[in-house]
Length: 452
Image (tube, rainbow, N blue to C red; front, side, top):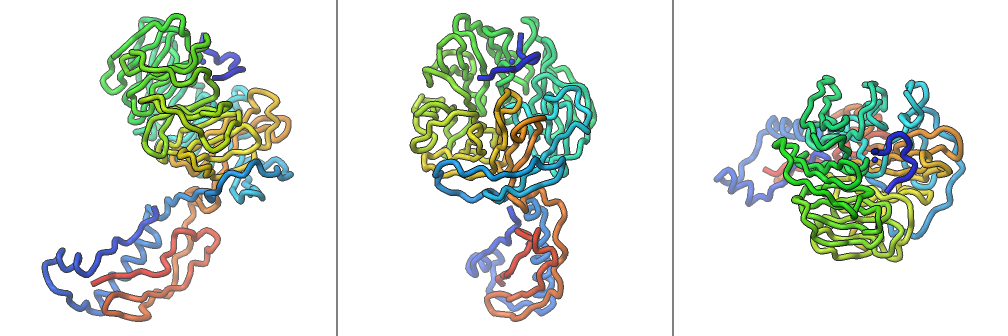
């Protein structure tokens, strides 16, 4: 549920050595243990250490803020507004905050320097690119440099499969655009009229299979993207929607009525199943910690409802805050990002009260644009939000733990690799630490064991 849309209203692992037991190793080679030569041991140690220290997976480590039990808001520190692309550290939570937009980018309008909304994922599927509002700017997701600037796209949504593809609408057309090649393809034209992806609040199912499109507030169309066919269409009439969306699995269509009908669930063929909330609020669709599809929303005691049976529960004990929720971490289900009350924190969706606190918002919230509208990355390791930093221009900001996969410079290679002991059960290797200790988290293996 949104307000103030203006002209855009719709008319809107680390690498780890695999250890085996002596018995498993014997069975695998069908023989008794045998001693390795010193050369064999040295070769194995070298390969293992290089893999453990510099394997591609270890370099793409994921670091999250500490998990704690929520104990209320923390005092907001006094911090000057960060300069463009000049990271600062949140002194309360220890996270790195980066302002990723600036007027020097030459936006067509100020809103293009913001991210769009809590339900709209700005990171692509492999988290190498970011789109800002209307995809006018495509940024490198590690350096935040602009790599593509073009005319805006209406309701752009990243593919969850292909990191180069954005789906969007134009008039009555549903299209896809390759952000690297600029190839722009018509997927389907709808004779029913101009379409929207759920009044700017819908999404595409995980795997790019289905999307719900609406023509005006009453006509809902479920489109099979993979096969290029309409599979259901229904005029919902008096239950006119504020927003509608396909669920992440593509099994359900969820609709929030703007005529007092609350939040209702249909199947993919638009057959009514159940009402889950009598009153809708800022909400998102995703998965809880038990792989159940849910809608989660704020400003209500029972803020979590399963789509399959309507079972309701609290987001966390005693939670009744307002603001926005984002369940866009589809690669790390079971978490929801809360924003809008001065702080951005991820709530574990198991009722435990566990949170991971990312940053203070530093926003006045005096205007719709300055409302943070926080959104969480696909892997749940980063958050993005809008802030006027108390007053003035509104920019997009990213918060994450230092040493996350955004650290693109590997630490220097460890030196003086040596074997300090050869045991019957394995090796005891030793090496001198990397000189880049500050950024070496997750890159060094202090002990490598090779069973033989």
